[in-house]
Image 1 (tube, helix red, strand yellow):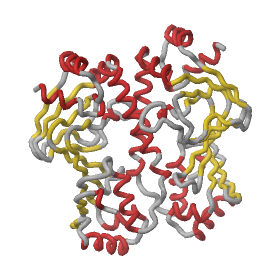
Image 2: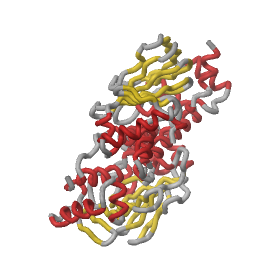
Image 3: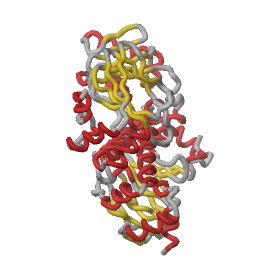
Image 4: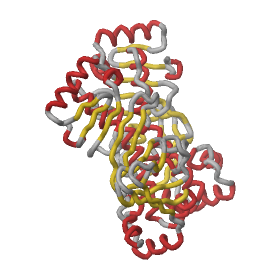
Length: 220
Length: 220
C-alpha cells in the first residue's frame, strides 16, 4: 500500500512534497480506492465532479466529444495522472470527457473537501495547484494566436493537435469524411485524398468512420 | 483612499471577503499605487510578471498579437479588473499582452509574494483564485470543440470572438486583407466583399489595415 502513496510524488500536484509531509497527508487525508477492469467506466462526460481521481496504475482511454457530438477523439493516458483537476473548482464542476479503463486500473481519489484541506495545509500542494491551473489557462489561451496551417495535411495535423491534451501517443478520431471536411474547410474529395496518402505510408490507419493514429508525435 | 479599497470587493478575486478581513488585508498587505496618463504604457508583451495589477479607475487598451506578429487585436477594458492574473503563477510568468492607458487610470498592485500571502491567509481569496483559474482553463479548453462557422461572415465573427477575452465592447483589429483571408481560409476577394457589406451597414468601420468594431455584441 505504501508503494501507491510513493507514486503520489510523481504527480505534478504532489511534486516536491517532503517525506514527512507525505506521511502526514497519507495519515490525515481520506483517500478512496477503486479497481477497474478493462472496459469499465470511471467517469462519463457531464458526470458531476466533486472528486479528484488519480490514475496510479494502468491505462485509461479518454474520449472527448465535439459540442454538437458530430465527432470525438479518444486518447490513451498512462499512470500516474490526475483526472481533469481543472474541474474540481470553477464555473463547470462536471467532467467534460469520458474515462474508460483500457487495462486493469488502480485509482485513488479524494473528495473536493479533502482537496481544499490539502490546499489549505500544504504550501507546496497549493503552489502546485495554482501553477498547474495557470499553465493550463496560459497554454490554451494562446491556441487562437498560433500560426495557421497552410496546406490540407498541415490543417489535419493542426486539427488533431489542438483537440488533444497530450501531443504524443495513440489517438483514435471517430469522424466521418464529410464532418472532417467541414472542420478543415476543405472539400470531401481533397480530405479523402490526403487521408489515403497518409494511410499508404502507414502514419495513420484509415477505417470506416474512424482514423487511428499509432503515435501522434510521428505525424508531421 | 478607503474608496479605492472598497472597490477591491468588486474584483472577482476579492468577491465575498468580509469587512473585517478587508480591513486586515488593507493594513497588512503592501499595496503599490500608480497613476497613468492617457497613452502611458502599464505593461508590454513579454514583460516579466511577478506583480498583480488591478485597474481601479479608468480604461485600458489591451493589445494581443499573433505568435508571428502578422496581426493584432485591441480590446477596451474598464475598471475594476485584474491584469492577467493567470500569469502570476505557471509555466510562463511574463505578460502576453500590452496594456496602455486610454483615459486617466488608477492602478493598485501587489507583488507575487503578497498574492501568495493572501492565498495563504484568506480562504475566500484562495477559493476565488482557484475558481477563476479553473474557469479560465475550462473555458478555453472547449474552444476547439465548438461548432465550426458555416459561411464567411460567421467565420469572421468566430475569428474575432475566439481572439477576444471579453465578448462585448469596442475592438480594433490591425490586419491586412490577405492575412485575414489566410486566417479564414477564404479568398482575398471574398473577404473584401464580406467586410465591405458589413462596413455599409455600419456594424464595422473599415480602414486601411484596420477594422474597427464599435460593439462586438452587435456583430452577428
